Image 1 (cartoon, rainbow, N blue to C red):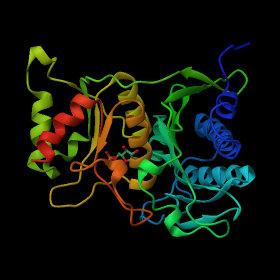
Image 2: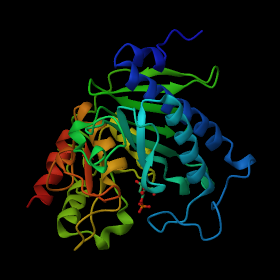
Image 3: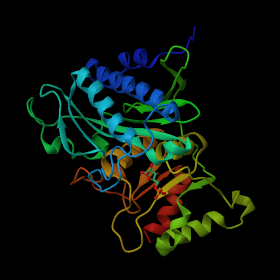
Length: 324
Ligand code: P6P
């Protein structure tokens, strides 16, 4: 019998009952997703949801993208404390329970193109307390600065399934046991190494980057034995997996805006803010190149954001290049 603390016990002992119920329900949905991901090859869930079916961003929707959104919808609805959510897979707000005190922003299956090659994928989410009075939630309930979040986290479905969560009191990781299908604490009080030696970026885009980002990449790849450079380049192509490595091993994850563009590819509300919240709670930093991500005032559910996040020493170093 595993003597480690269960996620459900950890939550009921650390947050109010309504938030605990929401997070426990969300984690239950992620258990189902883990099972689906691990059996993708032997069940008819590879490939596109339907011929030419695209999401709000014009991206082809994988069968699993659609299915995972439905699964998390059903678990959030069962939790009763969720008033509604926004998702990468849906254009507008999904209203659930007008009496719920919390709203969720989520990417149900991030990096889903990795599914077909059995590479890691993830779920990314944040939770805000509603600002509006009980009743139909307002758009402003979702468009809150990341610093206001009441909880944020991700699940990486890799060689093991790990849920990493913060409710504003540090960061803890929980591994899904294949024995009894429950989450047990496996990474208590995660603190990101202050000095990182790994940089993570899609270097294939180097010709699209500005001189600032290229200058930092040159810094990372230059020889300096006193500083363990050149740093190692690691890039999995799934944000939750790249961020999990960054959190545990140290380093910096970057998805910059291309030269001449204002923002990057990743989404502010359900990718960058959750990861920035987690990294800051673990002692790291997260900027969009100019400012702290958790201070950005969102104006649109699906707005994009550049991100540079990870160990303090590397985020402060890249800021020397990006802030000019
Ligand atoms: P690229 C996956 O599509 C994703 O949204 C993130 O999980 C990942 O970090 C990034 O995009 C990968 O993008 O352009 O390098 O393939």
